[in-house]
Length: 114
Length: 110
Image (tube, rainbow over all chains, first blue to last red; front, side):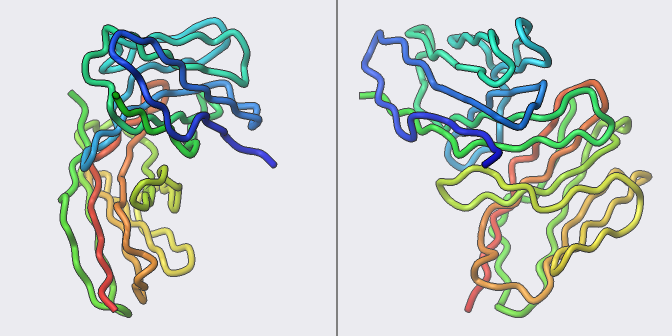
């Protein structure tokens, strides 16, 4: 079954704690993305990676970090520096550098602060 | 700042009617356009992509693109209550990132 998986579905963070959201894809896509969605809002780009071992900041990277050690994996860490982390986090992937590139989304992780 | 704009709605239509969703984009270099459907609490699901001026039909959905006016629309024929969702419009310019609109909430009334 090809697709994008995200875990966990729900994640609770305590004050001062770093938490890591998992994103895995078996679509053989080069590019992967992390978005944040707040209630009633659109998608805001946190980080993206076009190729293994390389990633770039998006529009709201402060308080987040990522790694891209494997093509199929792009974990996102929400650090204690992110003061308002409660949101719905979406991972996406695409073929990359393709004229008709299309993004596909994982099921999302909902992060709540205790 | 490259932007995609949508009316946030809610757009309410009766069951069986045509729902018309509109979107404008600021980046004249954008080549690809997408409509995603997002049910409450779920992730976006791709329903249509369009790359050339004109209409593209897929079942009950028709996407329309007018690059001169920088305008994209989605028509949903024979709207069903199951079509009630938020519809996100997105644009893509080769070598750059996708730009998403804030979404239009559609409510189909039985």
